[in-house]
Amino acid sequence: MPMINIPPAAKAIEDFSPVDQETIRRLDKIFWSEIAGTRLGRIFIEVTTVGGKQKAEAIQDAVERVGAQLSDVMYVGDSITDVEAFKLVRSSDGLTVSFNGNEYAVKNAEVAVLSQSSIVTAVIADLFFNLGKQQTLKVLESWSLKTLQKSTVSQHLCSKLLELYPSALPKVQIVTAENMDIIAKESSEFRRKVRGESIGRLG
Image 1 (tube, helix red, strand yellow):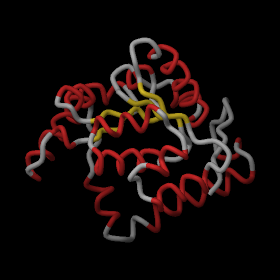
Image 2: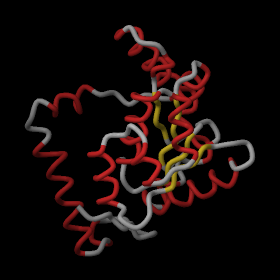
Image 3: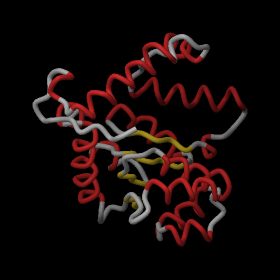
């Protein structure tokens, strides 16, 4: 399914290109008709949107329910509502990842991802599960297809990543005090490009 290009002044589906209109209609059908008619549709109905504090509480609750540790958690977020969860996981030595995040997300995460596809977070999760936090960060410090192929990451994921990005991998960087502001700016700009100006500016 092609990436949707959101015109800056778009207010209705007619403001999109014919190709994007078709993609939007297909997504509407998937979410509001096809998924709604399955067991998975119940999850959509039962899910309640929560704020920052509730996200952190939900993580703590999930960890306790399965008998895990917060250090086993990899948390992915993109905005100010993820800051509390980032702080909780990071303070317990879990891994925190900003995915197309705004400045609040980037400045509270250890890893920043700029990508049109979430396949990158799947790769990072696979590394984290198999290697743990410190070794995962070492792999990400020299982020490249060659490095990934030498690591323990699933070959299926590597192949899928290469299929989606044959010429250059999406940007993945370790966030430091020195590069934080630059990455926050780049990520915020990329976020607006991918999500559209109005949504991209949301906290």
